[in-house]
Length: 317
Length: 254
Image (cartoon, rainbow over all chains, first blue to last red):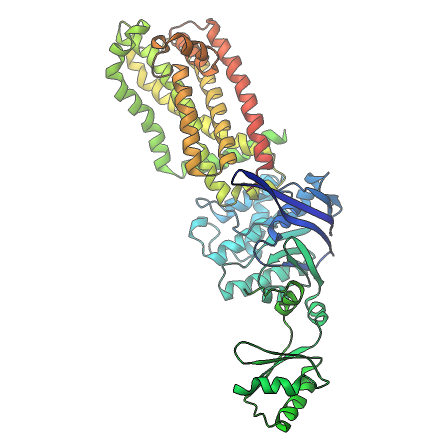
């Protein structure tokens, strides 16, 4: 549904009378299938929004090719615009009009007639549960309500692909869960949804597939499970108080330990192939060496571990 | 056709927003009244250099100039309204739709033209007791000139707003454009007082042609070359300004 090859974008910035070129996006290859929720995960400034804005025809592509719903992004913008919906991070509603008026205007901007637009607006109000406030001015809405209106605006023309830029940033946990449900519902209706996010749990829980982006490049791509499997194995952390150096010494030569690390806080971190079988072995080994164990914890790898492995940094930092 | 339909659509939205803001409407109407009331006592002595010997003469010189000043000023400052829409994403939301980019500009700018024409109507009505209006055809022709001026000024203002995208810078840029332009048009201060070099520059200013043309209309000379000249010049400025500004709407970044 979305195919890109070598998508590039750079910006010129002037600093101290010197014009420098900043490569915001350095060659993105994507292949997003129909009906999936595809996540673009990365820190702020990774080039997520720039990529999204290129795909949504808002900024020109410097280099590379892209096809969206069969239309060439560079040569057939009008067709691309008909096939896509786009919801910016900050939305885009006018304070002094109502959601219904916005929905009707949006539908009419896509060329629908007055009566068609009114019908679509009515459907959207029902589908996104906006009835309660649809005839109040937008400036009175809560963050979650506003977000629902934004999404309703984005799909009023029934696009094949919906781009959502950071759809849950700034939402409280309940609105966030609600938004995830809405996005899943769109997928259930056959829509392809492309989201950007810097939330690990959002990428993990919501997306069918994700691409991890950093410094304008994709560093990893796959389903969340595939990506986590890729960094292989589990992490076991062991608390042994003062004796962590000694514990590290006895554990590091054991066959099940693929890596042992003493962290600054004195905690011991072991990389193991399978945590469930390693834990009893760790306990036995430490007992045999006379090291009393206070805590032991098993961590399945998270997307943050994937990010850490691929970029050397944590996404949480 | 699509351009016209979309322009109408965007125009309706902006008229709606204006009507929803009573203060805006009130101040819009108050402004020309204030101009007229404050300046009127100064007119006769000030405009003697332009051959105004009676109050009616003074009004015939002053009112057309003030109307043009209103059209230029009213048009040039509209860019501030666009900055808000650029910041809150309304423009971006429109730009992902298939709506005509020219319509995004024209729909807004025509709302500004309507504002200026309504303000001019207020002035026209207030001028009736002074016997200023003698020929309705001339007045309508004058409105056509004012509409072109405000459309050009609004298009330029929106273009600059997209370019600078910063209210402080926009204020400075607009002030720096508006003041010389007003002076060189002879809107409020008569150019008859100006040195030759200033008058020569003013000869190439379409808005000065407009002021002279408007004065000819109010003096009852619709055949004056400045009348059709200002229509042609201002029309050319409109085409250039709209083309430039609409291209910025089409590829504005943020």
